[in-house]
Length: 113
Length: 112
Image (cartoon, rainbow over all chains, first blue to last red; front, side, top):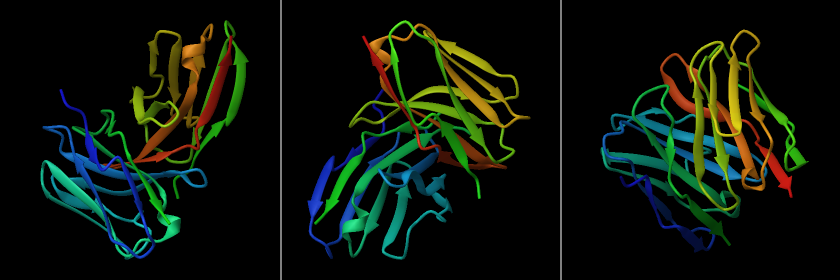
């Protein structure tokens, strides 16, 4: 079975540009999560969806960040405008039920110059 | 605010030795997750512990959960080099909220 698929794997862009990260969850999973990993702050939950509906976005850093899940097989995380402090690895994960493990994608390594 | 604390954060040990990683958390949630991450890679699920007293074992790794003490342990038996990685514990908020709060991770180096 295909795992969680994220694209792009790497993104390097200049400050002020719009960045869009994409995620395809595992088929049949009804929860999708976006996390960010940095050396300073570790792994942080940004937002998660259940049945395509955003449930908790309290981890989204500020209004520059937005996330959508238009259907069960696709989600985006957008940063506009991007800043150097947004540089991190962004992971998408999905799961089927509470109490079952979340399956993580390979991540997008984002560098904002 | 939910807090998850792991210790130690760094551990260097020799092959063949035993050691334990500790994970304390501040919420009443009884769902505790352990993940492994290799450098530059994604997170791999190791264990999910769902109730007080739960114990799970896979190879040289064994995880346990004490919800009353809000403590989970990951025990490594007769360590081998291939177990070198960063290990994270995580807790969800409970009450139907699924997002995970992670500890800072334990960077484990096992030397031949």
